[in-house]
Amino acid sequence: MAAHLSYGRVNLNVLREAVRRELREFLDKCAGSKAIVWDEYLTGPFGLIAQYSLLKEHEVEKMFTLKGSRLPAADVKNIIFFVRPRLELMDIIAENVLSEDKRGPARDFHILFVPRRSLLCEQRLKDLGVLGSFIHREEYSLDLIPFDGDLLSMESEGAFKECYLESDQTSLYHAAKGLMTLQALYGTIPQIFGKGECARQVANMMIRMKREFTGSQNSIFPVFDNLLLLDRNVDLLTPLATQLTYEGLIDEIYGIQNSYVKLPPEKFVPKKQGDGGKDLPTEAKKLQLNSAEELYAEIRDKNFNAVGSVLSKKAKVISAAFEERHNAKTVGEIKQFVSQLPHMQAARGSLANHTSIAELIKDVTTSEDFFDKLTVEQEFMSGIDTDKVNSYIEDCIAQKHPLIKVLRLVCLQSVCNSGLKQKVLDYYKREILQTYGYEHILTLYNLEKAGLLKPQTGGRNNYPTIRKTLRLWMDDVNEQNPTDISYVYSGYAPLSVRLAQLLSRPGWRSIEEVLRMLPGPHFEERQPLPTGLQKKRQPGENRVTLIFFLGGVTFAEIAALRFLSQLEDGGTEYVIATTKLMNGASWIESLMEKPF
Image (cartoon, one colour):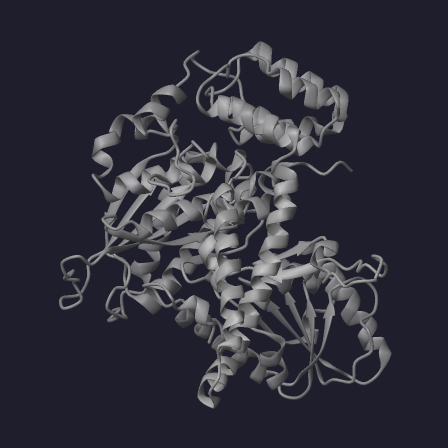
C-alpha cells in the first residue's frame, strides 16, 4: 500500500491495486523466468505503480531498455516487450527478435501494448516477419496513474498536440476509458459538466461506452458527486505564466518527472571540516516529491515567499526535539526518546533537503532577469501594454535568450490581447526567425494553429472583459496567508480554477456571457443512478468533484485547487486528473518541430 494515496476523501490505492493486479496476472501467463524489455518512456509511470520487488516476485530476472540491434545476453525463458503502440518502436522490436532467433535456443516472446493494442503496429510486425514469434500479444490499460492522494495523470506527452494540431482523438478515447475504469471502481458520477470541444467529445464517448455496457448495473455507491471536464485551450494563459508556488518553481527550474526531480549534487554534500571541497559528487541528486513526506506536503503548495518562514520554524522545532535528550533521566524517558529518533532523523533529513532546494530556487528568483521577466508577465496579465512590441522581449531575442523563454512571453502577450496586431506579430516572427533560424517557421505555424500566437481577428480584445468578470487579476495578494487562489501566481488567478470555483458556487449561469467568449461549448449531463445509490449528503459534508484537464495541467493550478478544497466554507473537495503534468516550457517544447 502507498500511504500517501489514501489520505484524501477518495482512496486512490484502490485504483493502484487494480492496475497492479492486472500486471501480475499478465506476468503469470508467461510461465518461467523472464526478461522485460522496456520502452524507456514507460519506466517512469510504471515506477509509480510497481517497484522492482513486485516484478521480481513474478520471476522477472533481467530488465533492458529497448534499443536497436541485439538484446544483451540473458538466460531466461521469456522475453516480454513493454511498449507504447508506436510504429518506430515496432522496427526496433523486429530487429531484436530476429537477432535473438539467430542466437540459439528458442525463447518465448510476448508483447504488452500500453495502454492499447494497435492494428497498425501488429501489421508492421507482420510485414517485418515477426508477428508469429509472439505467444501473447496483449494490452495493459494503464490510463490514469495515481501520483498522489488527489492527483491522477495519464502522462501522455503528446496529448495536447494530437488533439489541437492533428485532430487525433486517441488520447481523448484513453481519457474516456480511464474515466470508465474510475467509475467501475468508485461508482457512477451523477453529474458531468464540461467546457470545450474535447470535453464534449470525451463526455460523448463516456455516454456511448456506458450504453454499450448496459448489461452490468454499477452497484457501487458513488464517491464522486461531479465530474468537470476542461479543455486546456479554454485557458491557454495559465501554463505560459511562471508558477510561483514551491512545487511549481521546482518544476519550472529543474523539471519534475513522474514525481522525481534531479538536482545539482553540490548543495547536498554534508559539510565536513578539513575536506577542502574535494571529491564533489557529479551524479545529480534524485529526490522523490510527494505528500508521503510530511514537510513537503506542508510547503509544496505555498507561494515561494512563504516557504522560508516555515522552514526556519521547523528547524527550531526539530533542534528543540533533539535537545530533549538531555532531559531524559529515567529509563522510560530514554526509551521514549529512542523510539522517536527515526522519525526525528527523517524530519531533519527532509528539512536539510528542502532548505537546500529553497536556496537553489532563491538563487534564480532573486536574479535580475527573473524579476524583469516576471514584471513583463504581470504587466501583460493585468492588461498593460499588450498591444505593442515589448522592449524586454526585443532584448531577449537580441541577446539570444533560450527560444522557449521568448516563445512563452510572445504567446502570453498574444493570449492577453486576444491575438496580436498583424504588424506586431510579423515583427516578432521576423526577429525570431532571423535570430534562431528559419527552421523554426514550422514551430511558429504550430503555435498559431494551437491559438497561442495569432493575429487579432475582428479587431476586438476580449481579455479585459474576461479578466474583470472572472476577477483574474488581484492587486493586493497575501502570499503568506492567502485568501484567494491568485496567490499561486502572485496576483493572477488561474482562469481554469476560477471556472471550477464558480461552477461550485454560484454556478455557471452567473457567467454565461464570459463562457460564450471562451472557445468550445459548455454543457451539463446527468447520469441516472439506480435507486438506493442516490447520495444523501450530511449537513456540513463537502461535495467531491473530479476535475479532468484535457491537454495538461500545471502544479500551480493543482495548488490553487487544493487551496479551494481546504477552505472552511468551500463546500467542495477536488480530485485532479489530467492527460499530462506540465509547465510552460515542456508545453511549448511539445509543440516545437524538431529541426531535421
